[in-house]
Figure (tube, rainbow, N blue to C red):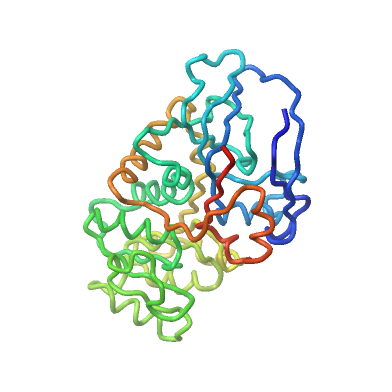
Length: 328
């Protein structure tokens, strides 16, 4: 069986290290394995981070990226019910979705309801599930004042939607021009730029109590010092990304007046979840997608084989919102 595959030859930028290969897969399916014919997948920032070599201890090159996607089970191995063939699924738990057929364990596949199209389902994993779990775990009934960094990002828009559902309108922060291109702009109290020296004071003014219960941060770096000072005693900085490329300073972890940093890693939660419970973990996300929430705006659609060329031509698309389609 010949499979068209996009491969990162070595660590580096997506725009520089991707190539297309035809691989021959001759080994039979093992116990519990399936072949999923991919129908749609995405480019997520997590793909760029992994290909960069940031997780060298668990990434071997050549490497097939792609953590998100949806497909149809085409073949099943021993121990997998024959009626699984034809089921639409999210094959999660590993990279490798940037290929026509992904071989994986059936236990890592989450069924996709028929009424959720591929263009929604393929984005259901990383950003929506992260946003949902963070809000569920960190925003209690007493939470009133919330701020979110990187307010122009897709996941910040998801957070804003979920918070508004709980009666909380957050304040957004962006490293660009104040108020520029905030995702889901109607959901925010305000969007402030951290490029302005007075941003901490201005942010404090957006809270009726002068501080915040929860701050969701995907930037990291020295800015975290100011964010910690903006928390109320007992407040939490939920750190889930590193867009600045710099870690949070060590003093942010000293728990002054009960303020704390909570490091949120979706991978840890998903891999700790019993496989049989994965569909239940995704059920609220799929429900929100069905009801019009947690949608991702698609910047461009591109065929699998054209992906390396498109990313070389437009490097910004490597940040996400790119829908990869497959020949049927």
